[in-house]
Length: 205
Image (tube, rainbow, N blue to C red):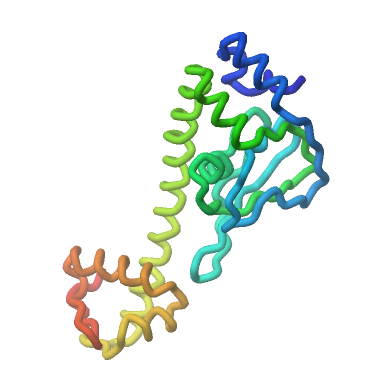
C-alpha cells in the first residue's frame, strides 16, 4: 500500500492500522505541484510514499530559504504543525518530482493520534528532530545577516553612525524587527551602543 514506508506504521496498534488504511486517501501529483503555500492554514497532512518535496520559506527581507527536503516515508513537520494547531504554514511545499502518497484529513489525523500511543510517540519525535534541524538552519541564516549588518556599520568609517533602526533596516534590506534583534545581540556583546537616532561602535571584531 505504501504506508509501510513510514517508521510508525508497523508500530501501530491493529485497530489504528486498520483506521489509517480506511481513512488515508491515495493521491498523485506531477512535478512542480504546490501542495500548500507559506501562510496557508493546512487542513490535512500529506504522507509521501514516492518522489520528493522541497520546503521553502521566504523571509521578511525576501530571501528564499530552503528549510529541508522531504523524502518518502517522512512526515512533514510544517504540514503537520499547521494542521494540528490551525496556524499558518511557515513554508511552501513544492513537488520537485512526480509524487505519490496519501492525504489524511485533520479529523482523521487527530483521531489517529488519540487512538494510537505509537502514533503519538512518532509525532513527538517528529517535532523534536525536525524542529531542531529547522532552528539550526535559521540560526545560520541569522548569523549571515549579522555579518551583513556589521559590514555596513564598519563601512561608514565612523565611531558614531547617525541613523535610526528604520533607516538602517532599509539600507541593509532586513526587516526592522529582525534588525533590532541583531543590534541588541551586538549591544549585549559590547560591540555597539544603541541610541534612538545613532549607533556608537565600540569594538571591531
